[in-house]
Amino acid sequence: MFKLEPRPQVSRFWTYGAPILALLITVAVGVCLFAALGKDPVKGLQAFFWEPIKTSYALGELVMKATPLLLIALGLAVCFRSNIWNIGAEGQFVIGAVTAGGVALLADKTTGPWIVPAILLAGVLGGMVWAGIVALLRDRFNANEILVSLMLVYVGTLVLGYLVYGPWKDPMGYNFPQSKAFERVTQIPKLIEGTRVHIGTLLALAGAAGLWVFLFRTKAGFAQQVGGMAPAAARYAGFSSRRALWTALLISGGAAGLAGALEVAGPIGQLTPYVPAGYGFAAIIVAFVGRLHPVGMIFSAILMSMFYIGGELAQSRLGLPKSLTGVFQGLLLFALLACDTLIAYRVRWVGAKSGAVKGAQ
Image (cartoon, rainbow, N blue to C red; front, side, top):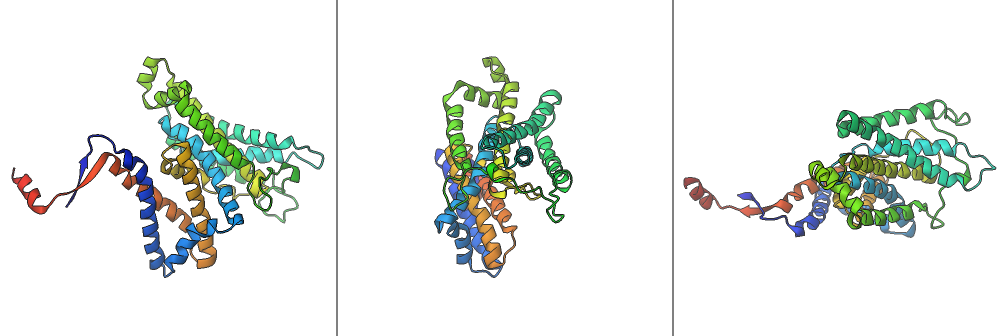
């Protein structure tokens, strides 16, 4: 039989090899799933891994969907490396979209291009305020940030629903729950004509570079991680665990809020009840598959974007349910959790005879 045996030290190979093995397991299970549903596994895999990179337009869609995932994951990485479990990035994303949308609705035909930075700033501030609630309750009342941040997701969604069904509802929208379409001047500038790729991609890549410098090349980044992981050691070294808490949550909330602003002022162009797209939850998987490292998260964001696009294609072309996207995301996460066991343990085959001898001893 197989037996898990502790390693004398963690495996550097499996630290980076586990995500790859998890992806292979996800693909293998996906093939079995397609076959069980009576669909051609080859066409299913093509929908997830070939169609999203087949054409230049498809690549643009891939990058466009990966941008919010990467932005949110970068902020979450700061939290998770600081041992602060912000599970509510989806709510911060929604509130960032709401505050950004509120600024966008102020624009009219005479508004200048300055409105775009104002929209992005409003999104960042909205996300920071929403995450600041979590930081305040954790700091002052020692509330569990997992529960608080998660519950605030539903509050944020209800705030959005109240606005699009009420005060911000488009009077000319045939009673649909949506705001009026934003003025053209509020649209996020595109990077490539003919695609929906916008300057948010550059912001996300700049954020990845900035996070790498902050975490691995600055004293503040080192203090941030120590303050969260070992508060007693941080106090001894003169670092503030309280500052680590606020810094992590405000950075994470600001990044999620920026992603929300880019989404509503970019591809959506208005506020609707469908702004919550699950990016905040999917970004948790992106962060851990990318090993909480900026470079790794770039690749894992692209992979998760493939799952989103592949799920949509599987729905339209193969007649499969849209929930297949969540199935693949969940498969990847559980496979990663299982494969991470190999970092601290090795698998040994223990024969029945040798096992009996050991039992007799």
